[in-house]
Amino acid sequence: MAEQLTPEQLAPDQLTPELVDGWRELVAGLGERGSFFLTPDWVLSWWETLGGRGPAEIAFWRGSDGAVEAVVPLVRTRLRLHPALPFTVGCRTALGAGPGAADHGGFAVRPERVAEVREWLAGLARRETLWFPDVDPLLGGLLPPGSRAVARQSCPRADLSGGFDALGSRQFRADLRRYGRKLAAAGVTFRWVPPGEAPPGLLDTVVRLHRLRRDALGRGTTFDAGRLPLHARLLERARPDAGPAFLLAEHEGEVVGGLYGFLHGDTFAYYQIGWDPAWAPLRLGTAIIAEAVRACAERKLATFDFLRGTEPYKYRFDAADREDLSWLVPHGLSGALLGLKHRLKG
Image 1 (tube, rainbow, N blue to C red):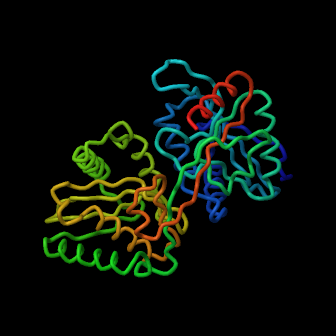
Image 2 (image 1 turned 120 degrees about the vertical axis):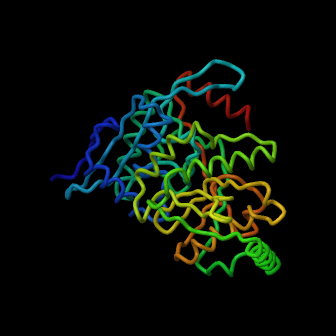
């Protein structure tokens, strides 16, 4: 098979199991340039649920041996110019980006294919506006000339190479031990649930506990029943070494707290948490996060990724910022309007 120079473009429901497996292998081989949000597990689950199975195309490049070497999933969408106004403008964006909070976006591309993919995207940019939100900084080289970074999102991550006991200050580690002793005395235990082993109903329980916590704080959330179909699909696609995983806090056989995220390669991405506010005096929330970080370190993962947001507690685990960038490649009136929107926001 000759090396494929122009992409094969397929709708998501036209993919063969061979292509999906090749896509997974491609992302797994990208090292720190890969993430769970680039995998077919996330992208296809998003398209089937939040994306409403709308019109989309996935471009594939293959090597001379048939191996998948680049994947660019795209969808046409419309973006609102202002929350209070009904006006929208059309553009092309990455499939799986946007609602659902996909961080570290972009496309899965082997280094030797970057120039071809960039040139192909440049061809699209001559005809329509491109919008790529929350792109991993290591993937910015894929973007065509004229791309403009219009937003930044801090995504702290903790380096686990030194083990759990190397994280944080001496006082913080002492605090965590004290919280752990009090919770143990109250009968609370912790349990890691790896990908593919979540029992039926566990996701619903964590969503319910998340809502309890947010209500206690007087804050809204998008991690609710409306997002359950996406996460149910992710659970269905889980494999032993990749997919949704949980750290649970249990008391007398009942789940009283849960942290939910995604294992991929040597990284765990912490997505959401929920816990019964009745346990707040014993610092259950902090303890759940600490136990999740400990579980990942014990499993020799390299990184605990806190994803977007600069909440102070993340930095107590020695997390360091890595910024995702949102990129606009403007074309015509839609590009001018979106550019104006982001200038006004800035």
